[in-house]
Amino acid sequence: MKYTRSNDRTATGPAASFTGTVYVDGLRAPDGQSAVGCGHVRFTPGARTAWHHHPKGQTLYVTDGIGLVATRAGGVQEIRPGDVVYIEPGEEHWHGATADRFMAHVAIQEADDNGQVVTWLDHVTDDEYSAAQGARS
Ligand code: MN
Image (cartoon, rainbow, N blue to C red; front, side):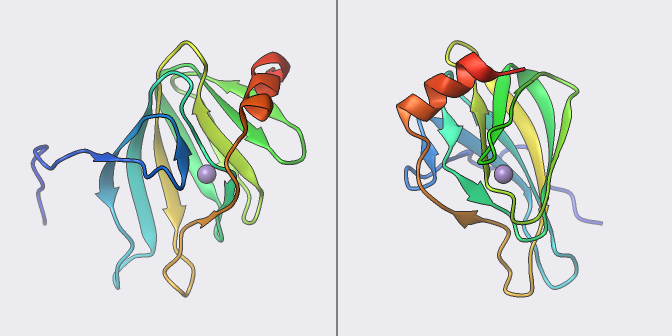
């Protein structure tokens, strides 16, 4: 058994992969024993990931606030605490806070044979973000 106290420094999401201020607490990184990676991600209002996809899919569990998850195919969902979102392998998407609320989720994803859990694409533009705010269901 390994016990980690809650005293590690919270990381900030890198500007190459996020818009706005995002805080990430890692829960586990994939290693030789298990390919599962997991983190708790906090988005400040207006913050969001870039477009991206996951080789083995991803499960999100919303823990706080109000957020959005959108797919390249055009679907937009408003997400709230207790909601669970499963994103299929290779499905292009982004997730983040709404413009005026924080949002936090636990993110669970499995690494592929190369140890990768995500492929990052282009940033979500302000126009795309604004459109998603209006289109959420
Ligand atoms: Mn994702």
